[in-house]
Image 1 (spheres, rainbow, N blue to C red):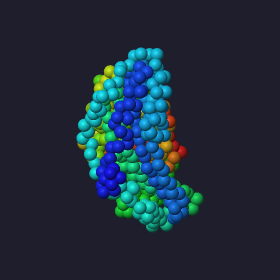
Image 2: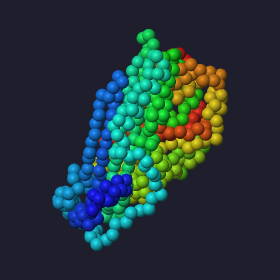
Image 3: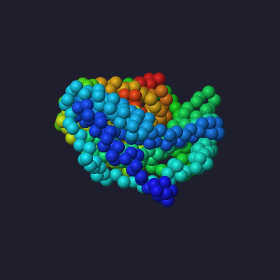
Image 4: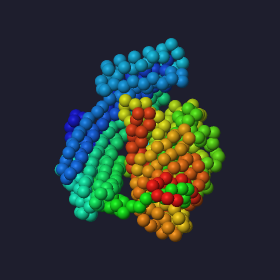
Length: 482
């Protein structure tokens, strides 16, 4: 009967990853050793990817993964295990082994197998119009070929194009001994473009990506060609780059991916596990001024279709925004369930994990500096001599101190209030908490950029964002002179 209904209504969300009575049995078994908390996390994932190089498809991959993560708390300790299956006997056996790990503690509560599991309400509802599973390989190939053509057609100096498209469809179910459960279906699509330009002996690259928590309505040929041209524009523009100046200079940082500096140099220090480990420069500063009064920063996993968005976090908590910094004042850290209890703070929807094989930890989602009131051109006009950093490459950050070095992949001189020649070899060297205090102005052109964030061996989808901002002074490293 279920197969019949799935065939008739293929886009309905069927919640039957596990029978509810099985979930209750597994939770009861986990609690039998005296655990104070138990949880199951079931994930089914279907993934696909295609890569094009030298105008032909080089790689095509598909994957299927399904399993269940099991977690218990014994006092201050967390015990975690997983099974590559949702078979009831295997889950019960794994739960018995894990539950016995702290049997002598006797600190837990008896789990009522007759209780009901309740899903918390969520306001996050999005429509998926073109599911990856209903989108043929030829459609994806056409998108990649369109990207290749748009890049090569942009300028004769584009000599190489690499582009990839990928998608996932997931079903995720959580249940815990607090009597809470959640179910969500997650659909994500990702397109990346790397264009290489060469003129004589000079070689430059340009990179852009487009990623959404959405179906293929978010990536069509028109949108794909647009980011292809943007990647090509960066590569061609940088062919004319001059040596970057060095020294302490005013810097205007562009919107969207410019937010990666806040994410890396400040955001990780706002994750509550860093606070508990004394690895955060922001520890003990809640309610205190840590940034310029023009700075408000937010983490919001509830924004529809954004790359880091979801209905429930990795612990089944409904998504909602959290204000991290308001008018320069530190308002909140980023919490998962365990750190919120440890620090006796209201929980936020930031308990995230890569898969059922991983323990959830506090992680950012869509993290951004909020829109200001200035016009971006006004920020440029206020600088007599400085740098406009539009895009960034790799960088290094010490999360304990916030010290960072970031490479500028697309940057320009600012001369007498105007954007001038492109520059090469430029780096920004500074300290996150210090830079927060030196932000003089925030423009109104808020934008976002997708990416992936690694922490404790887990890689997850994150989005960074900001409007154009002006920093009064920051050290610029380069190959030129002062």
